[in-house]
Image 1 (cartoon, helix red, strand yellow):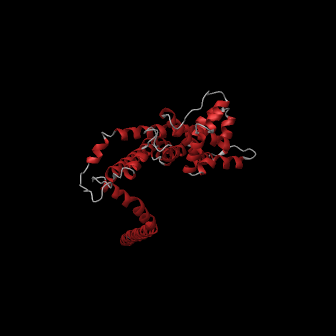
Image 2 (cartoon, one colour):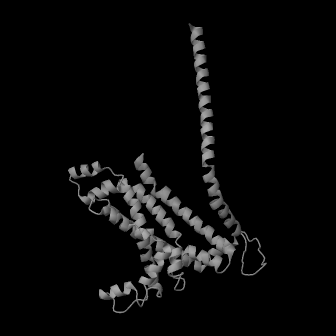
Image 3 (tube, rainbow, N blue to C red):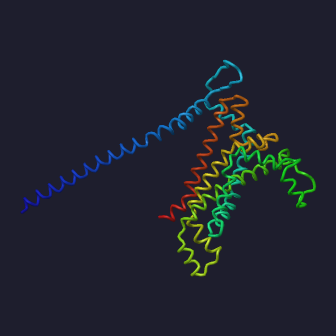
Length: 321
């Protein structure tokens, strides 16, 4: 009996090891298949993202100017990065970008939440209203910027006509000439353009909330504000995080709206980081320093993403556990 038990135990151990070996082989085969299926996407990312980024970093280490034919291209290491620290134009672009992205994202979050809550309710014509809300976001930014340039026109713009009819102003305002006004005019245009995107993301989060939770809150006698604060907001917090992340990154990378609407003017009052980088590379033809600006902007975007995911996302992850 003892001998039989020992043999049975050996066979059991051998069978277990064999099963583990088979599972390991199957896992390796699955991993190879997964890598093979993901290879086209990995190759695409490598070609359109990683290689250009590496080239940009490499160019940032040189004094590279295309203003003169056959100009020398000496290797200067991190000298371009040190030049940023004393570049007043870069600090100005950083302040403009921070103001535009900060104000627009904050206002878009509030307006987007209000719009999402409204169109999440059932009412006659809800489909038409939802489609209408998305129209500003569906327009290309160039078309939107040209439209707002016409609205802000000092002679025949709709904005001045409306404000004067409401007796808010007595004389037309030259929106795109005064630096203290132009920046806010651009922010309004940005809010109008991208608020629907924020509302769309938040609406997707609201659609996932079970109706039973609202029924339970009504039975408990909770007010609408208490229901929103204690039921809706905690559940859609991950959605809010994603929406804020996307919009903040877009805000930091804003280029087409200021390029078409103001071209960074008057002066440099609306010149953002990406627009400054563009002007440095394609107007001044300083590709070395322009590449440095592009790399620094990329680092700023990566840092913002890290803050959102690691810092703001930590309470959400803890709540899930």
